[in-house]
Length: 223
Image 1 (cartoon, rainbow, N blue to C red):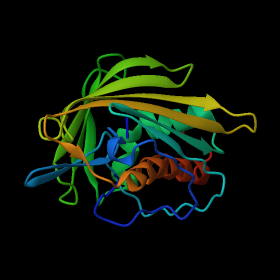
Image 2 (image 1 turned 60 degrees about the vertical axis):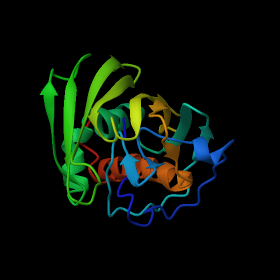
Image 3 (image 1 turned 90 degrees about the vertical axis):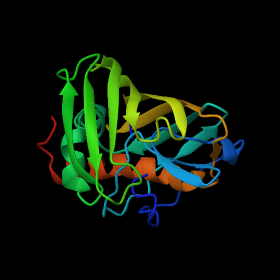
Image 4 (image 1 turned 60 degrees about the horizontal axis):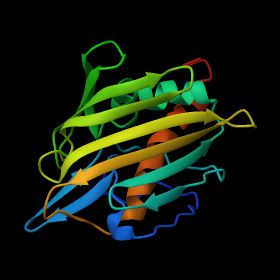
């Protein structure tokens, strides 16, 4: 459920391979720019930033744009279960630590991590909106899979009508994992998608790479 700061240069230093069927339609609930007459808003399902610069060459990024969805895949040397717990389910705990200049605070609003649970992210002035709330619609912890919906903030009512995400972290043969994301959205009438799709995809990747770096540096965490 995850621009890092959309007003700063991308943090990625690893080469990225990407392809788009129509870059003007590649919106993301994690990170996308939307533009309407006289107003520009940035949409994010997880809008964070990090000072972590990628140093691995194993990153594979693919994206497919459409009028209402995109898919995204990232490879990681970290085991699936650990990356899912840190980069998805407990990201509200890690985000303020790894990106305090973007995420001022984050906390559960309702529930204890099960279906229907809601959590809130509060942003610093670096972001164009102050908060974001998301509701967990589905979770299978054993399969490292979840679905969530953006219900408040993050562009709701200003750029988009609805936004949902489906994340699954699958084990890889080398002991690492592959993060697979599918995001769907519905734009408000008159809203157009900006052309900065590549930057948005890089921003999504940076979230998981920040979690990856934390887990590599802390091998006992999230086991």
